[in-house]
Amino acid sequence: MEEKKLAIEVNHVKKIYKLYNRNIDRVKEAFGFRRKANYKLHYALNDVNIQIRQGETVGIIGTNGSGKSTILKIITGVLNPTEGEVHVNGRISALLELGAGFNMEYSGLENVYLNGTMMGFSEKEIDQKLPAILEFADIGDYVYQPVKTYSSGMFVRLAFAVAINIEPEILIVDEALSVGDVFFQAKCYHKFEEFKQQGKTILFVSHDLNSITKYCDRVYLLNKGDVLGEGSPREMIDVYKRVLVGQYEIPEKEQDPGGLTKTGAGHSGLEDEIQADSGEGASAGQGQNPQLLEYGDMRARIEEFYLTDQNGVRTTAILKGNEFTLHMKVRIYEHLPEPIFAFSIKNIMGMEITGTNTMLEKAFLENVEPGQVKEVTFTQRMNLQGGDYLLSLGVTGFNEENFEVYHRLYDVLNITVVSDKNTIGFYDMESKIVVKDV
Image (cartoon, rainbow, N blue to C red; front, side, top):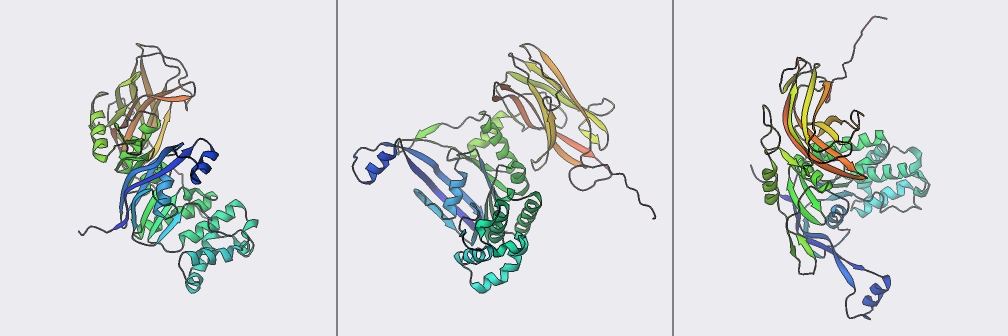
């Protein structure tokens, strides 16, 4: 099969800002009054390389300030890179700052034509697209009123409708699918699905990790301007969660010629670390993942875990509709205030389907001491549809307001749900149906 062409190529891109202690220092430098620089360099992006092929849906995730919005603005031409090159092959529609090109004094209709013209369409082409735009926005006769009279919801509906209906070859989305009410959001996601099915290229930035898992073929993980890794959604999301709680060791930094430090991180190193973290912790057994991801400060440790069916027999195959129990044995190594014991179940794509913990259930609100061993059981009815799922376990807690991870085991066990009746979606609502003559 012939490899598809690149739709977006980002080569060694840097974006550097000068951070001044005082505004007067900026003015003095601008007019040449100060010979010695009085600023610090901040790398919003540091040697970023991204390749996206035509027809791919690629996600970018990372903490606030990691450079996600900056790289999108550079790709769309809103910002220029300090160094490096960006090549884009195809017409882009960017859902970044919705309505950024709107004139508040113009009517909604006039803004549709204004934006369409800026995107390179003729008046005749906009005429052809207008019915679809107005139907999608669904703001009625308000389209003839000045935009400054719109509610915030009406404004983003029209802006989204314009951006989504220009038939782009490349769609770039930055958290924009969460606009409007729940019905409009559903319409936005349906359009997103439609774009994906049409084989369009999509670059997607979101804090909604379930959406990243559901839609993306690959994911890039950014942290403080550096690319920490690139890979499958499940792999990158698991690493991202480690970054969030300070349990991911950033590779050694090397000195940058500009006087700052930079992170030298690559995909191969990330894979090596995940491999090094796997398979050493809890007891092995039937259905256990030999490549599980394990981390934490180990002040508490999950030593054993297994499932039993309604008869108390150990198994990883659960009959749909039957009760089952998850067992965890946790050894405590330090005094811990009210530790939280948790589990979650994902589908094989990595999307979290369900789960709970002792804090949510108000089942255990006690301190623990060194040397104690706690056996924790979660008993519930299996209502998930038939298929394969992945179980993750955790022991966490709070030190005052700081969230801490003592031990986590991601995707540690394969659960097979056996069913002779699958309904729509992830779980069975166990509907009782009555049909009768009237």
